[in-house]
Length: 408
Length: 84
Ligand code: HEM
Ligand code: SF4
Image (tube, rainbow over all chains, first blue to last red; front, top):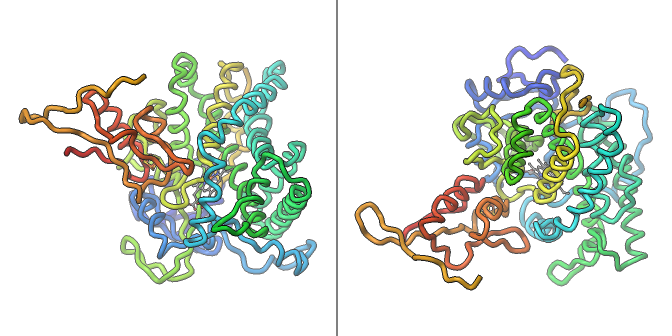
């Protein structure tokens, strides 16, 4: 890819400098042309002001969720070698990922179905086992005096918690972390890998669903979805499959990225570590502040009608990148946006989106962040980045550290 | 427990007695649960995460700052403090 010369007309969300440090770029765009445009990766618009993200997310008539991925491909690149999925595979797995890929009316019931198992009360059931998991992970490397805060810690947590919720074996966690990365991270610029990863996830979940059907009576999310009724009718199995796919895909990369960014921030800010240790009651607002400052998720919208936003004409079929992370650094809403203030008073961040698609897993994500920060600091109150330049970042749809050597 | 809420009024600048209440617009609320976490005891949330004020939402003067915090942190702009 050629070098980006003008970020307002030719941005590249996969540019290494953007993945590593997008903040000055967003400031530049926000200051010049708040809705940027680029032809790269299939073409898209990119709002960066809080107000614009707020408005677009809530205008579901013009901005549909039928396609929420930040890149699009036509056919796989020529010469690609991979196993063609069979027509049956494709038909069977062409179930979307409700509710994230749906608009009302389907969205309304699909979301309502999913909210109760993710309520504050429901997710609190998983807090103790998350604590034990975090403690065990730290105990595994603490004697070495160093570890990878991303790969050895952050990455290990959400996949196991989700496996436990869905009711699938935790031993598989490593494998589906790879599939999810293949779909949502590495696959964003590699259609073949994306397709393969999606099929792997669908196949595996489908097996699990069949197994749950054969052995009913478990207290887990797959069983809940299989037994649920909407308007007196059971939920179609394809819908259960699509929803499980979404939970796996939406719950792993995102949360692990947030935990990783939090560990990365705290490695470099002894004053914030000290505050969290001396004022443990700050943890809830600290989690919100870290979510604001290092928001991981950028979604997309499909322009459903020819429309105009902020003087910017957008034709039907265009893509809009929902840059929630940039909105959360907008100085017109957040005082001193580039500073992490653990007890920030005014923090209406939209890291979990805004409007009807507000993250259904937000209570779970918050719980995992809180517990993973607490359990780390309890055991490793003093630590630092071993080599700040060795930290690598993923970005595009989900931003967070992927390799992060730390030492104590 | 079992204590009645304290004085139900605040005195405005002109010396008039006004009752301040916190309200949640159920059309706007998307269940972020921020208010619930920020202002313990002031809101309740249902199974889907949607918030409503506890009781009739009347704010005693000592609760005003907390209610303002809930307003300031709700991403959906669903919470309002109104005088009646
Ligand atoms: C820090 C971690 C997380 C972040 C930052 C995050 C962010 C988001 C965002 C921005 C959206 C809105 C999508 C849109 O507007 O198109 C969303 C939706 C969603 N998220 Fe999360 N998410 C996180 C963790 C999770 C977890 C742990 C789960 C579940 C296990 C989850 C499940 C969902 C679901 C089901 C939706 C779709 C809701 C709907 O369309 O109604 N997320 N998330
Ligand atoms: S913070 Fe706002 S959106 Fe969230 S539950 Fe409270 S009122 Fe609803």
